[in-house]
Image (cartoon, rainbow, N blue to C red; front, side, top):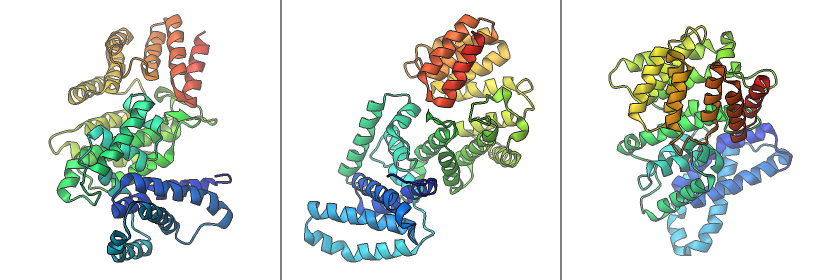
Length: 404
């Protein structure tokens, strides 16, 4: 794939889920469809930079993927079966290639959240297919080893293949049943884009922008509106999170005049409208917390008591150690660093978090606040050793060096 241009790479990322959705829907075998689309993407990455973009890039990828699947079908199915479906397939191809505005990305989200799969397996598979995340990135989001996640994704594909439940467009009822998993996928895709778990860049805007785009394609009510508001209110701070050399700038040091006020206004209006309608879900609560941060003029003027209370509600809704970690941070702002450290001790027993860099980083900050520089240095160094994000590692290493 030598010579791939940034333009080609971004285009392929955008088109991949659209093409995979169409190919998987037609063929019915997700694993085979994914393999075929990957081959088409490899072919495009090597040919387009030299030959130029085709007139219809999406159609080009679709045709190449279907040719790969045809070769596969010839070795796996009888000629009679192929002849029975050829007329339908040609009609499908013609309609798909002619409709240059069709976007199967959102459809693919719901297709991957297959009823034969457990929620964690469906989410993991969808992150691969729609988000384009690597197995290591998905494992980091789930707080499990990479090998465990690879097995989970492989089993998910096999489960769909043997379930005898068609990989097709879900009905309205099926969409409702799968909505929670779909929203979780979009949330994780956005998070990986906003703070990349590995690599030289803090942000992957292609992922965060795609998560926002797909969320906008659904009705903006309830938890969907809450998730969209959360994304907008969080993404509004993106430009202020890095310095001129890509270095990480923490929230309390950011130039708040650089925050995107249009996004903040849209996100605030969304959450205000939806949170007043009744039952409040976890995305709405997180959006309300983000709004409190965005509305404050500084860290000191932030409404930490209310944020602490909201994280307490979130803890009751979910078994997520990251929520508990954020509540400990808020508690330290309300009751002092020593109180926050006491809460962190309880998280040491959670296998999902005890070796996570964020736990060490938060502990380091609280020790620094208390003036215990020796322990703060040790924790900053422990956090730096555990993150795969270069900007975060550099930030943590510099913090330790300055205290030393």
